[in-house]
Length: 271
Image 1 (cartoon, rainbow, N blue to C red):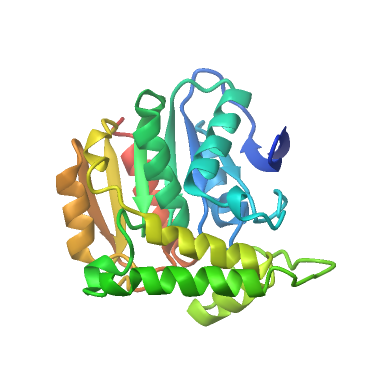
Image 2: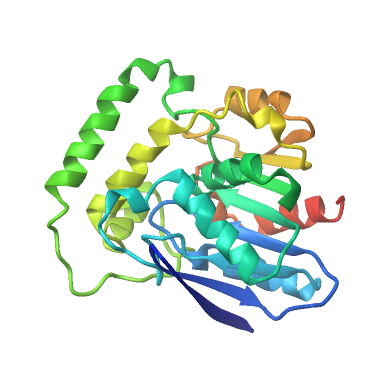
């Protein structure tokens, strides 16, 4: 059984979903990717509940049932990390395992650096620790891309929609299908603000501070996370290793859920 909970913060409502609590057992918090929602994790949450793990999955602000206010300052990494801390406090969690996919992986890394003692284990799935263009030798384009995204967000800030499409994130068939659906689930300006935020991903000097055992999961042909970046990330951290999924694309969390559940459970059993 999945329970919905809500936190009314000073910057809007945050919704999250949790399995029935099992006293004395570890809690895993799952963070979805850009333009998705908590349904990315429902199947895996049920698998964990069967093993008596506690599971929590927020709708990151701008997504699902959480706040979608079109205000740029609400969609910065520090705000997302603060939202995660609010959830941890609301659930009275002093330690937990954190799983972040794609953009959610960036939030997971940021939170883990800022709250070292709270994270008992970290799983980063198809997520970058530096700007996504850096490992493609296109880093010089970062300032240009950042400005273009902010300009598009400003131009589309006045976009209005009475209802936003909600969907089960396991349903998209591929990149363009997922992108099209994603643009119908949230204000387009918010989507662009969050894409622009990835330009600020620069954890190269701080990721080594993370003390929690860490697993970096990469698809075998992931266009977003290169093997070189995954290996560099692991080398920079105190206790990390890379696992390569059999899945060919970036969409491990939505399209290869059985395999990812097995990878996560195997990791949890080592903690």
